[in-house]
Structures are given as C-alpha cells and as structure tokens.
Figure 1 (cartoon, protein in one colour):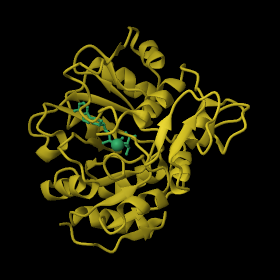
Figure 2 (cartoon, rainbow, N blue to C red; figure 1 turned 90 degrees about the vertical axis):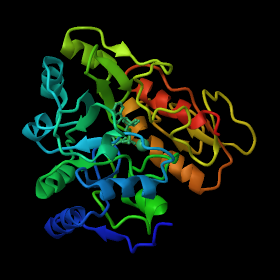
Figure 3 (cartoon, protein in one colour; figure 1 turned 180 degrees about the horizontal axis):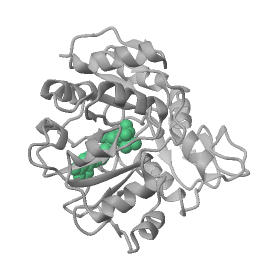
Figure 4 (cartoon, protein in one colour; figure 1 turned 120 degrees about the vertical axis):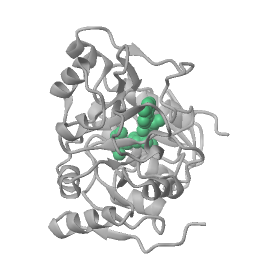
Length: 317
Ligand code: TXA
Ligand code: MG
C-alpha cells in the first residue's frame, strides 16, 4: 500500500521550479503543466521513481511512458534520429507532438519507462513552465498524464489534486492547459504512422513529411499499448452523437444547441478541445449518470476530439 504523502501545491515561480527539481532529484513525483494536459513527472533514469508513477496512477500493467526533454541535443542522446524526425521536429517542436523512435543503447533510462520495448516516445513541450522546469532539472523526465488509470486527463492543477492528492509529492500549478488534449503521437521507426490523433493532424504531418502518414489500426501489433478502448473514462456513461436529450441526461453540446455545458457555441474545434476534459470533469462532479454529447465534425482537430469521446463512451471492463 502506498503511504499517504502530504502533496504540496507549488507556485509558478523560481522557488516552485527549484523545489520541483529537488523533488525529482530525490526520486519523488511532481505533476507539471504542459500545453496539452498535466503530466505526472519523475526522473526517467531512476527505477524507483518511475515505478512510483505506475503505483500512484494505479496502472494495472507497465505501459510505456513519454520522456519529456527541453532541447534537441538531449533528445538525440536517447533515440536514433532520422530524416523524418528532423522534418517533424523542425515543423512542430516544441509543441503538442510526441515521436516514437528507436531507443539508443546506453541511453541510461529506467527499463520501466519503455516497458522493455526497443523504442522510446519523446516529446519537447512548448509550455514555458514545463520548459523552465525541465531546464532546471537538466535530465529526461518521464511523464504520463497526471490522472489515476482510466480517469479523464487533467487540464488544471485541481484536477490533479482531486485524483492524486496524498499519492504524489507535489503539483506545480501553471493554470489551465491551453490545448486540453494529449499530444499527437507519430511512430517514426519505420513507415510514419499516426499512433494517437491530437492537435497536430495527420494531414499536417503528411504535408511536412511529403508522404502519406499511415493510420494505426487497433489490431496492429505496434499500436500504442495504452490505447485500450476505454481509456478516458468519466464515471458517468457517455452517449455520443446525441441530437436530442433524454430525461435526466447531462447535456454536453456543440454549436447552437440548448445544453448544460457547450464545448463551443460557435463551433470552434480548438475551443472545444480545450474545454473537453474540463467539462467532462464538471458534469461528472455534478453527479451526472449519463452525459449525452452533440455530434462533433470529424475533420481537423475534430478527429482527436472524437477519438477521446469514443474512448470515454467505450464499454468498461
Ligand atoms: O500530451 C501528452 O502526451 C501527455 C503529456 C503529459 O505529455 N502525456 C500523455 O502520456 O498523454 P500517457 O502516458 O497518458 O500516454 C502516452 C501514450 C500511451 O498510450 C503509451 O502507450 C504510448 O504513449 N507510448 C509510450 N511509449 C510508446 C512507445 N515506445 N511506442 C508506442 N507507444 C508508446
Ligand atoms: Mg493518459
């Protein structure tokens, strides 16, 4: 049983960064803001610290983690770089995008980070607080989303506290996350393959690479192991593509509809992505038993929004 810890809330200032980096050096867990969602960070070279991430999240199995770095030199020391990666980094880093590349021998990371796989997921976030923290720490930081396994990803420090208070050393409060959806993941070990849709779309990646980016299919062996069907689940049932509302349902709208919370009344997909997890959290907290969601157009950022909604609505085990 994990011992209950007093979780500190750190402020977004020099003293907060220094404290967070010290906790990481001591093998502790600090949740940090990124432009996508809050991450649950630990020293990626420290086996015990990384094991504690799995314990705090209650992850049933070892599912590989994304390593966060502040600069390109540090990334290249961990993975075998290639021309595709160069193009993608030029266009989208720092930013809401993760690349899966071959792990270098002797990278020095805990085996638990990659769950023993020969590839590593790397990301250079754009959020200024994340960058300051990573620079202050000076090493690779492993960070999955800072939620209990199977819960909705956190886009605010208080979401992290609601899920992980007493299980982690600290959360650094950097305010709400701007993008609100987890990063796009592209596999670049072989044929460029989209492993998780996100803000950076498959079309944008294809354009930068000058070739069509393949789509991962759920049956593919190389799939991101964390992409199980029910992965972003609120407590409430979720009903998709609702064009009318049943009695007693919480109504999560999009566009010009009468509802409890509207992802974007003006049908702006960026606004809808930023609001998605926050609104699911709010309707859940209000005790909704079913959340009915308006149809979201399946183009551009709508692909990533529908991906997360489909997972939220998937049957639970
Ligand atoms: O926006 C994000 O990506 C956030 C922030 C904190 O950076 N992180 C995040 O981490 O969403 P997580 O652990 O919740 O999701 C990472 C996904 C998992 O589905 C995992 O299976 C996949 O990335 N993944 C990690 N390493 C991989 C690898 N080597 N090959 C394929 N998939 C990998
Ligand atoms: Mg997650």
